[in-house]
Image 1 (cartoon, rainbow, N blue to C red):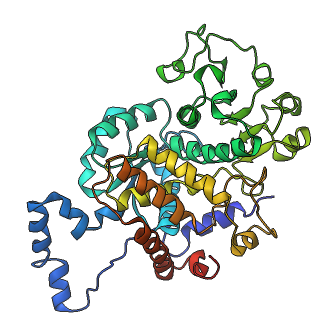
Image 2 (cartoon, helix red, strand yellow; image 1 turned 180 degrees about the horizontal axis):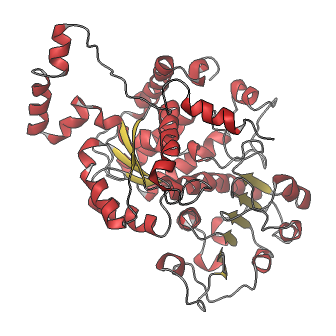
Image 3 (spheres, rainbow, N blue to C red; image 1 turned 30 degrees about the vertical axis):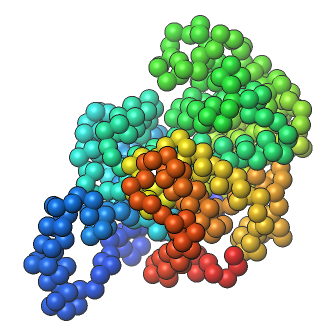
Length: 440
């Protein structure tokens, strides 16, 4: 049952101030002296300091807390190529999530261009404005090219959340699923339905966890990706195998893991029944309808560890568990990039949090008495306010350990400051985080 009507959704976006975000000053400007410092002539002091030392832009401007959400609207949610203007409500929504969950400010940049090099040129030219770039809703395969080129040419973090957000969250779930099942990553046989940006990024991260290439079977809309096919782009070719599976069902026989980033209804109960013994892992992430429903998967295999993109079932694969806190950590240590090690650190932090005692307010938010680590709780809930402390600290530590942080943080002090920061932000803007200090 839908939580809202079409009319309610449109009213939400149009009532009062249009859209979902606004820019507000953070310094007083009510006296002549303050006005003179905010603009001319006092602003010249900040300008000259930055002219002498470019890194001072992080000290005297909001750059260090500002992320550019860049999109051309070619792959918007489940809506497809609807263009940059129609995609803008989503980009504003991304800004809301950044702000509410991690106190990160956002300008959404909606580009009327389908030329990957032009998008790179424009985005690169914006570097002095931002502390990081979040690429969003850009279709494959262009998104791979754009991200890789910008990562090489820019000296601030560039992160395509459509790829890596899902990868990090499902990797966290897989880490805990391995612990529960007693299996090891190197022994897993993984079947992937979908070969777009998210599917390939997930599979790349799983390989970083130790999954063997020869144990991966990836499917696109035309079938299994194998060496005999001549219609594969360079990104799909990297997962072409010598072995050829006749169908998705054929590949799933004995498989330990199913990852779905394709379309609803492509997996049957019999296919789930045919998976390996002892807690098969299923992440059916197609939205709004997963590749197989939670109820059908659990009926077929009550021991399966099942996650979907839906909030009304256990183990929701929700990117908001990752991107706000990843950028928070990267911005605070002034990282020049988001590395594979930082992604793995974020996934491990999520996995670890799911094993801690869940606060009462989280249980109440989801209408349950308890949430305890096990097959139906391997991924923490998005409303767990401890996420910022766990994930952001882990990301900052990985950045410092990996040599991509320009600023060294005392991690104990940093953790405390994050708790204070998000509470202060909630007080300013008014969010669900008002209860932050009540039950941690």
